[in-house]
Amino acid sequence: MTADKLHLCFDQMSSPVALHDCRELSESFPLIFPGWRIREIPDSATPPVLNMKRLDNRYVLDGCWLDKPVSRGDRVSAIGLLVAELIRAWVRDDDNLLCLHGAAAEFAGKLVVFPSTYRAGKSILAACLASVGTPLFCDDVLPISMQDGEAIAPGLAPRLRVPLPDELNPVFRSFIDAHNCLQGEQYLYLDLDDDLLLPKGRQSPVGAFVLLEREAGIDACLEVVAEAEILRQVIWQNFAREVEAPGILSLLSGMVAQSRRLRLRYDRIEDAIELLQEEFSTWPRAEFDVHVKMIKPDIRHDPVSSLLPGYYLRNPEITVVEIDGQSFLADSRGASIHHLNTMGSSIWSLISEPITLEEIMEILLAAFPDLDRDEVRRDVSNLIGELAQKHLLHGTPDN
Image (cartoon, rainbow, N blue to C red; front, side, top):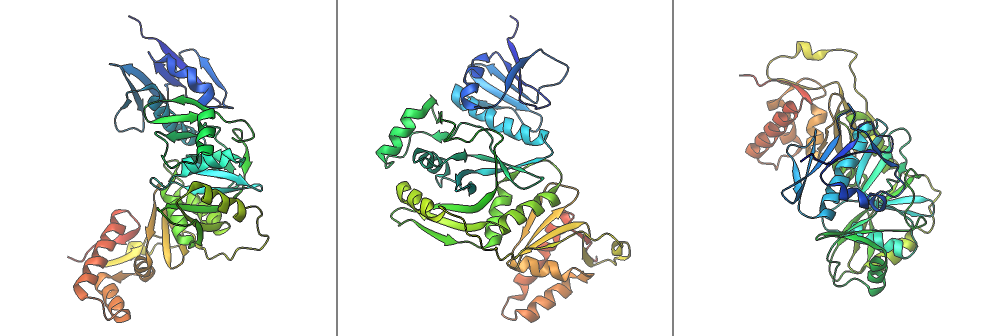
């Protein structure tokens, strides 16, 4: 029997998506991808970026960056899997995009972004914000323009985990039930009007990052958060191409520095929404006090060639952002961004000139005489080894 193949092109993506014996998935795409132009194309010489197949009553997805095929049992879960990997393919296909895991809603013309944290309720909070008329930008993935740092609406239907929380306000539950357009074993999708889900391609500046922390019995409150904590969270939730880490670090650190930085601790969603509406009804005109220091790579000279055995030196091709006594390092040859805490940043500052492990240890013990010598030796040795393995510094032990 000949397999049923369906090749679909999503907007301007350079490679199609192929559905093998699972054409029924495409019937839900207009609901899941509102505003996207999806068209069927003939089987061409361009290999599909993703292949979804129906095998033994399961949906199996394969892609070039996946370590192995991934399968799902029900149709809605398979669509969710396809959406997640399609967005990854979209970002890889467009040099102008990076993407953050998180939800975002528009308040008074700017976005409040809720970076993804495990089971903190960002998607259900986003849906409930929409129920009170707050325009929703996204509930899970937030594309960012690498050119100007503005967010770009992805045009994806919000997805909620089921069952819904037992304590959910009946008004919110009724809104979700009324807009439930597709439900499976684990998730449901919402079909929202254009005024509640901003259209694909709409651009908006980011005005605030708000970390969510759900805690039973607590009164909703907002707390100021340090720049370094927000930047670390945003970097962890970033996925982009396999290169350009310095550019991504520069962009994200600048966005965080120019945004409000808060933590929302809450129990009842209705209290959280009321607090957010009050806090972000307007935006202050005052300038932000920026604490970011960026150090660009310095490759004008090559001190590495004369480095003696046993000495270590920072890789001069590393871009560094320093905030609140912490450092974020980006290697121009890769996509990784590395975080150093206060002690790690102190050690990083010491290796701006050739230095041995023993010299680093003695300087730290002189500055912190109460530290245990063996613990300092172990911690310094581990950090130096990790930095060397990641090509963030040069040098070898003196054997």
